[in-house]
Length: 538
Ligand code: CFM
Ligand code: HCA
Image 1: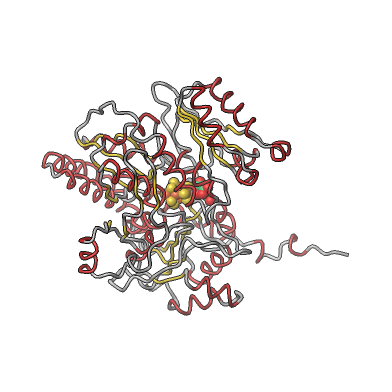
Image 2 (image 1 turned 90 degrees about the vertical axis):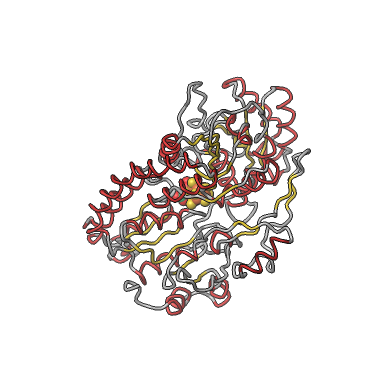
């Protein structure tokens, strides 16, 4: 890679040079090279606690549960049990869009919280929670109310599940709680897991009304950020594929209840919804496949994969026709920007799946990724290939038993040979094979898990990318360094970027960002000897 001036070891050394020895030793394990051209996939340290004192970009368990997985469903009233800040700061910031539907039941614009104060912390908040659920019910008469615990709730021991059980009985609607206190787990990833379990336990498969449709699928791990799900829905409709439920962008509780009628689950963001995929496979026998609608080529490939699953020539032909219809506009947009974008470089440090998926979109306009990483993904998202059979579901009681959360170091090994995998499969271990991030990046590229503020600053100095993709916490610091930052969480004000229409939007947006001259005029205040750095104290 011509743009990388140093080899991996030199880069790593410079990145870790200023850190205390113990910290450097730990961080060293979280940084590996890519293995695109067939190198052995290196083991990466992931999903471990951030070293105290380090400035991480991670979020909390409440964010993963309420903000990410359960938040985007329009007709479930989401009620935060806690001090007002948690509800307030997770209010609409993610830009998950929704169609209010014919019934108009759309509670997404609202922010409901019990607003716990000192009194509730001292004397307990259950009474207040009960009253808040009642008040929410009286105001909205919703189909469902979901309660989310914030840190103090777990600390004072409010029994939110007892309260919701009681209120469910009293109100006659689905009321359930999530023990997603922010401090649980090492990141928002624990919150995804809790939300997956609760939605499976209380909602999925609870309505047996038959659903019409020919090729019935669910889309898991798509949140309609910037309208992505609208574009994917458009494509499915054109192909004649019936989408029962999207977990959880532009979704309703009824769709979740009936989702078990699907023939196939397609998983877009594996990190946040893999648990539901596995539980639905175990309980309802619905297989799941990994797909990706970020990137025009990836979209075409995913549609073909779905058609191949159904083994129906009619669907296969229809999918080919749709691809043929959609691609010319995409190719024309790419051709327009390619002379200006080819050879430019990118870095992506985002969440648990987008740092991988968006590399396809960059590739389509001739841009290479120099470095990438997730904030909270697990080893399987990085290394690919994944052992299933970690979750056992009791078909009658809906009890969910976790067999093992952390990968077994012997069974879980991305370097197993096909023969070894076959032997394990014969013993009943079920594998899903899919590419992780590492296997799709060049060996000169750096992959860094849970990158921190210091490493971010340093890696930009060392590798000088033309664009950096991350979130709001990184945005302005990096732009002050003269590097454009595209938010890959909420897309800034843009999107959709999924599907064919999304690819065209992306090409134009990136062309604008990497080619504007404004970035070269920026001088970071900390390099500028500005008055704020020079204040004289007398
Ligand atoms: Fe999945 Fe997401 Fe992501 Fe995620 Fe998130 Fe998000 Fe993300 Mo922000 S569910 S892992 S917890 S694709 S909120 S829509 S953008 S970090 S990369
Ligand atoms: C979250 C949500 C977030 C934050 C984005 C950001 C999102 O993790 O709680 O840091 O800019 O996508 O809104 O990931």
